[in-house]
Image 1 (cartoon, rainbow, N blue to C red):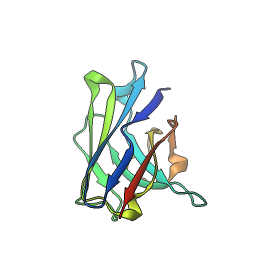
Image 2 (image 1 turned 45 degrees about the horizontal axis):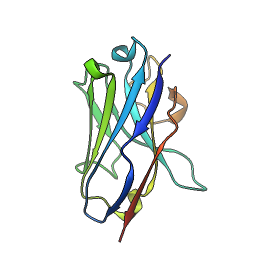
Image 3 (image 1 turned 135 degrees about the vertical axis):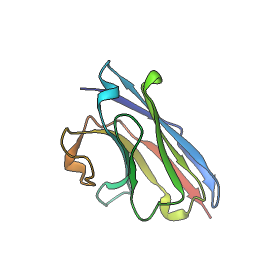
Image 4 (image 1 turned 90 degrees about the horizontal axis):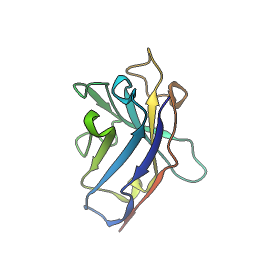
Length: 125
């Protein structure tokens, strides 16, 4: 398993940008597909984006498609989420997670594991 630590959250104005990072420990990071989720108080964690083990393939939630970009650097054991054109509804705690084997293409949080502690993103209007 990998251990994950997110960073890069903060307060940003509507239309602004942020880049989140998720640093992984362990030598097996490059074998995992990775994902980002987000959660607001009182609601379930929802899928944002995922990237395959090599970085060659990605998929996104419809709500962020065209605004967010997921990427990874396996040499640095890090996955990123570039967020542009931010909206107030993007305000949430953002989590990264490793996808369980055999679940590529899923958006269900039950198919992800090894969650980080989260980083808060607040978009002010």
